[in-house]
Image (tube, rainbow, N blue to C red):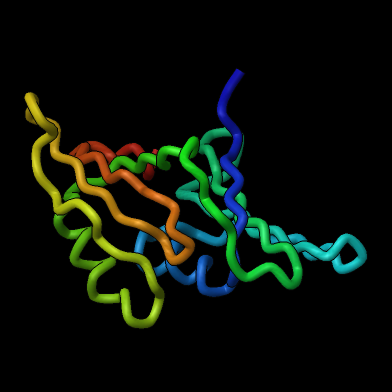
Length: 139
């Protein structure tokens, strides 16, 4: 078994695609529009299934906002430098949305460097500093 994708419902599909591609460096892998069912899907990631897990963004026609609830936690992404990704998000916040909610730094009681950002719809994304993350993406 393997994790294939995580689905997030979004209020503005293009804004979310722009955030994940421009601020987090993902690639738009494919889209599917289902006008009769009134939804559009966009799949993004750092590579395609089955080698890499993807994020499925779902836009339901006419729904521009969702209540996130308290059960959802976050998506985690391995990055070379969490502070640099935070700066990239901060630099694009005015045009893409999103925000840095925890600056890069070590976890409490440990040495692993993490940061937290939110995407334009408020979903949390944890950045975990892993210097080998970029080399893994090339394989």
